[in-house]
Image 1: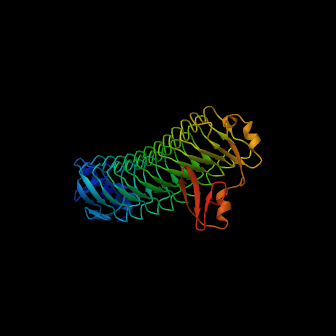
Image 2 (image 1 turned 120 degrees about the vertical axis):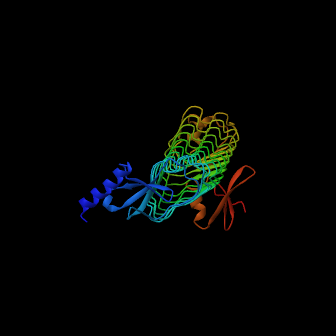
Image 3 (image 1 turned 60 degrees about the vertical axis):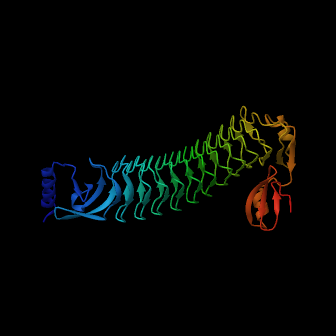
Length: 385
């Protein structure tokens, strides 16, 4: 049969069914023909009767003596199907489109095969999934993909992911820990905003930018280390992280935008990298527990208004050797009563790790210490024991 005759034959069948979009249903699952009909590919689509229980999507489906490969899950295919509890996706599927599982509040279990190359925006928005492992065939996470998944406790992000879209995990209240792999180059705005039970975040060494509100309101987060790859931190990135006690800002950051750590009321120690030139207004606003400020910049960074509002002026400030006078005469910095020079103005971690393996950073009596395989050091590179 020629391609033209084949096409006319299939269209005739579909018109007879009253479905110009090439819809048909087999074994309780509805499909749309996609692409050129001679390709014999279909996507799962929505239907008038809600899907429920456990759905197993076949890798191929036969209709009217024609076999089609199931290659995608269409937009809104299972949206608001609250009776859906689990779904099995075949390895023939390469794409999950926008809003595919939107508001499937009782969908708890899903396994995404390695064949899937893309997951659309809001695909699992407000769904009930409790864990997700993304396949290494994906290169990006779209915006709001898992936003509002209040039962989500764990997510595995593969090394193939290069970017994480805005609000991707916003308001995932049960999410506990996240490892952002070294392949990721940017964290967009509000990515983890409102993840109130998030206690641990490891930011990969290739991330260049952290967007606004990225970790806003992550009140269980206790410490954050911003790697040397990061060049910019947008405003309110860590605002209202009330459980945050220590912050290390890497040496590539040139500016810290306004309100970045505003209302981090339990923040005890902050280390500012040597390349920072400016700190925006309200950055450490109401960080009333701050008891140690270390700044490796040889030229005092310019400060916006109220950067250290409600921070005690008796808080000790540690600056590079030979730069005490510069800080004592710089606007904002000169308001502190105790400015001290440190012996190691370069990156203390690199200095220490030259002969040791850094195991962890610990807080003891309000002081941030670096524990290695051989000894424990202060942030000034002084050996404690």
